[in-house]
View 1 (cartoon, rainbow, N blue to C red):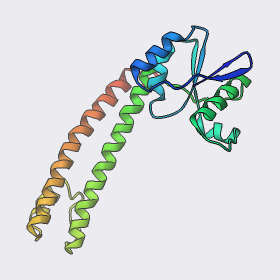
View 2: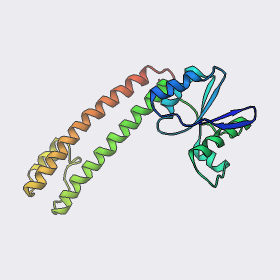
View 3: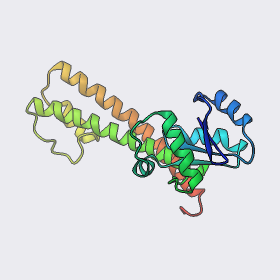
View 4: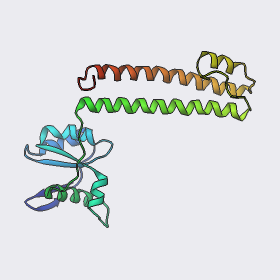
Length: 197
C-alpha cells in the first residue's frame, strides 16, 4: 500500500485481502480519502468493503496503466506507487464501475456462458466417441433430443463407451436444468429493469 499526501508518497505495508482486514483498514481511513485499486477478479468486492469509509474508490484499468507507466522493476510496491502518482496527476485510466444490479446481471450472464460452453464440450466428447467407432452422423436434427437419443441407443458401441455416453447425457440433463434456472433469473431481472424492457 502506498499513501500519496502533499506531493509525497510513502509505503505503508500490505493489507491482507480478506473482508476483516479490509474493514479494519477502511476504519483507519478518513471520509475525505480516495482509494485507488487495480482491476482484478476481486476488485468489486474490495471496492464495496472500502466505499463506505472514503470519499471515493477508483478502479484502475491495468492495461492502460501499463501502457502509460513503463516500470523496469515490477513489484506490488512499485505498482502501488505508480497508481498513486498517476491518480494524483489526473492521468489514471479508470474502469467503469457497475451498480449492484448490473454487476449481478453480469455474473448471471457469465455463469450462463460457462454452462453453455461446458455443455458444448460434453456434446463434442460424445461426437468424438461416435467418430472413434465409425458411427455415422445422426440422421436426426439433434443427437441429444428424444429421437436422437433413441437412435444413439441402437448404435453398436463397446460397453465402456456406452457407459461414458450415458454419463455425458446425465450431465447434459443436469446442465439443462442449470441453464433453465439461469435463464429464468436473467429474464426476471430483465423484466424488473426499465431500460432493458
